[in-house]
Image 1 (cartoon, rainbow, N blue to C red):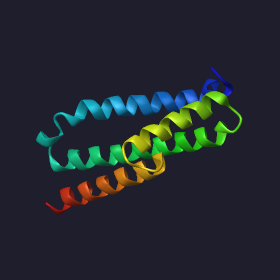
Image 2: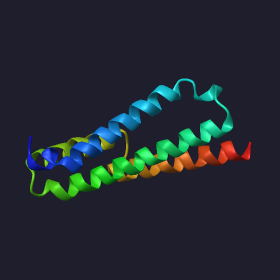
Image 3: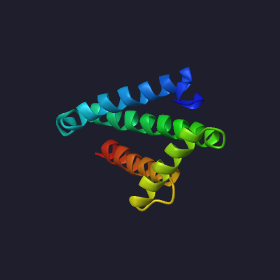
Length: 110
């Protein structure tokens, strides 16, 4: 593992992202049966997860110039984003946030 991935901050961020994702994924299957407040809270937590992912990716991009493993991961993430039709992960995350904002508005308007 290289310096970027050995960083305590990066390790903590990755654990937080993974834990948040697991929590959200376990809620998703039953979210349609939950009250409106819980659904809105779920949307907000998904939005928070995207913010965490964006912060991690920004750190990754900054480190990629000096860290080969970070550069490799950045490249793989970019290729995966492009495979889904986005020019970058940032574009993908922006679209996800738009979708969540629309879902939140819909929940609040009903």
